[in-house]
Length: 150
Image 1 (tube, rainbow, N blue to C red):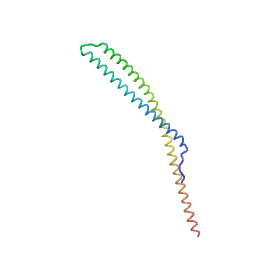
Image 2: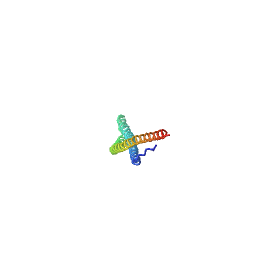
Image 3: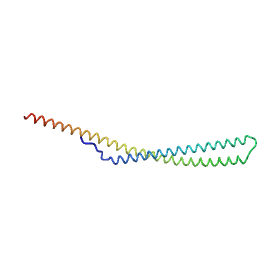
Image 4: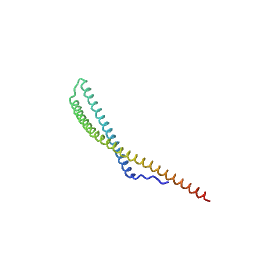
């Protein structure tokens, strides 16, 4: 019996490779987003701690303007840093969206070729089975007809 060979195997491999690359890129982008969100959360914790420090300084009765202004400056720096993280997240989200769309398209292209390959394989097996059945029948007829002539 002959072995099935898919004529578009190279194209299928190329599309699978492209799909795998899209998956890897998406995973990297999602990981980058996670890291940025963690960094932003840390900045927000620092901001909250500085705000609490200002409240604590104010509640003692003696106001240390130097410490309060230093904390205010630090809070403003943290707010700016948080805004930068928001911009990075926004940019990443657009890249993630594009990457997801590319992954869906790449996955569809692979599925189309997989379906085509399966249809051709089924057709190949049907033809092979018919050919094998015909050969068996011809062999049977040849042995029985030649045996009947003796």
